[in-house]
Amino acid sequence: MNIVKVKLPAGAARAYDIRIQPGLLDELGRQTVRIAGAGSVVIISDTNVGPLYGARAERACAAAGLRCELLTFPAGEEHKTIATAAKLWDGLAAQSVERATPVVALGGGVVGDVAGFVAACYLRGLPVVQVPTTLLACVDSSVGGKTGVDHPVAGKNMIGAFHQPSGVLIDPLLLASLPQREWSCGLAESVKHAVALDAKFFRWLASRAEQFAAIAARPASEVVRQADTLAELIRWNCRIKAAIVAADEHEAGLRSLLNFGHTTGHAIETLAGFGHVRHGEAVSMGMAVATRIAVGRGLVDSALLDQLLGLLTRMNLPTAVPAGLSPGEIIKLTTKDKKVRGGRVRFVLPFAMGQAKLFDDVTPSELERAIRP
Image 1 (spheres, one colour):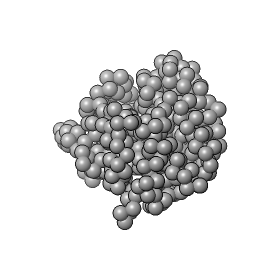
Image 2: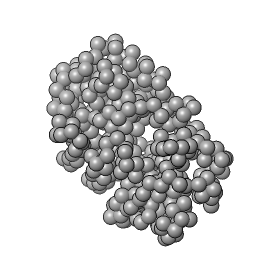
Image 3: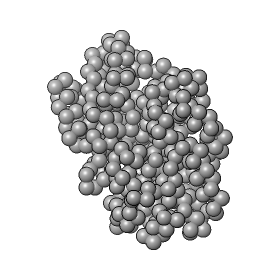
Image 4: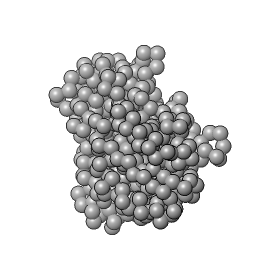
C-alpha cells in the first residue's frame, strides 16, 4: 500500500493519510473504523457512482460492524447546489446523525465537494472520509479540504468551507468505469501540478502520455493491468498537493499556485454551461491562456508553451477556447474569481517549467490576446 501523509498546522492530531491500494473499497468499513472509530456511517454518492459501487461500499461497512446509510443525489455539476446540500442535510437529520458519525464521500469531484460541504456544516462539522472514483478526484480534489457548491450568479465553488478529511482512501481499480473524456480531465490536473510545481513530474508525464492515453481508451482491462502505474501517478500528485496544503492550508499564498489554469478555466466552465465543458477541459484551456500571457510578458519562451500544448494534445485535452464564448464575457467573469484581492484579478503564471508565481497586474488586453491568439 502507498501511503502519503498530509501534515497540517496545529500538530499531529490534524494529520491524515492518503492510502492508495487496488481493492481498497472492499476494506472501506475496516478503514473507516480505523480512521473515525464510530459505530455508524453515512455514505454520500451520486446517481452515477451509487449504482456502480454503493452496494459494495455498504457490504464493506456492514462486514466491519458499521450501521450504514447510503444517500445519493443527481449526478452532474448542475446539481452541485445549495438545494442538493439541503436535501442531504434532510437525510442526515432523518438518520439522527451524531457529531462523531463519519460521512464517506464516494464519487468524483462533485460528490467530494458536496459531501464535504454538507459534512462541514452539519452539527458544525462531521468527520469526512474521501473515496474518490475519478482520476481528477484522486489526483486533486479529494485532498486538501476544499469543499463547496456552485452559485448561479457568483459562479463555481463560491459557497464553501475548508474542511479537511479525516482520511482519503484511493482504489485505482475503481477508475475502470471512467469514460475517456473523464480520464483526460484528471490528466489535466496532473499537468497543472507538473508545470506549476515539479519539472521532473512533467518529464515523467511526457514520457508516459501515450501509455495513459491507451489506458483511457480501454479502461476496463488496462486499469487492472496497469494498476501499479496508476498508483504511482496518483501518489506523485498527492505528494505534491500534500506538501502545498501542509505549508498553506487556507490558500494565503503558496497554495494559490494550485490554481494554475483555473482563473480563466472557471470562467470558461461557467459560461459554456456546466457539463458542456468539463472541469479538466476548462483547466486545460486556462493553462494554455496563462502560459500565453507568460510568453507575452517574456517570463518564459515559446518552447515551454509548445511543450505544454503538445502534452495536452497527446492527452486528448483542448487548448483553444471555444469560438462561441466571448472574450469579453470571460474577462468579466474572472473579476468574480475567489482569488480577487482589492479588486485585482490574480493569475498564476509560469516563469520556468515546474515554477510559477502569482500576478495581480494582468490587463484585460493581455488576457484577450491570450484567449484569441
